[in-house]
Image (tube, helix red, strand yellow):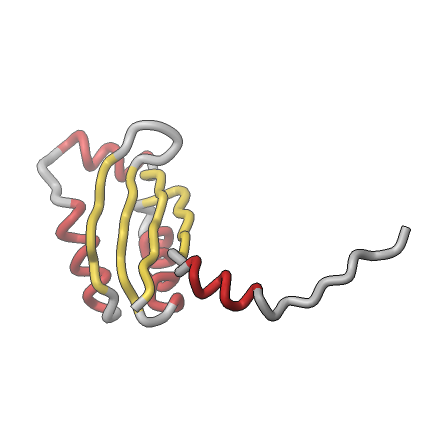
Length: 105
């Protein structure tokens, strides 16, 4: 399983919902992730450029992308950036085989 981190901004409609009632966004996100076989790990509201951080695990990026597109289509988020966590030791191992010759000026 790969860990994915989502950085999101709520739409104006979602903000109205947050202010207008006791809606539990975390439960809704967890159910949505579960529906595609992704594992919900955490969600936090943040201050700054993004309104929330979402962390999930999934065996494919496509499942995470499906959740992201569904949230955008529903008008819940206006922006959602998905980052994939990587194992730096695997990157270092792959880099050992890279052959690079700088271009001649």
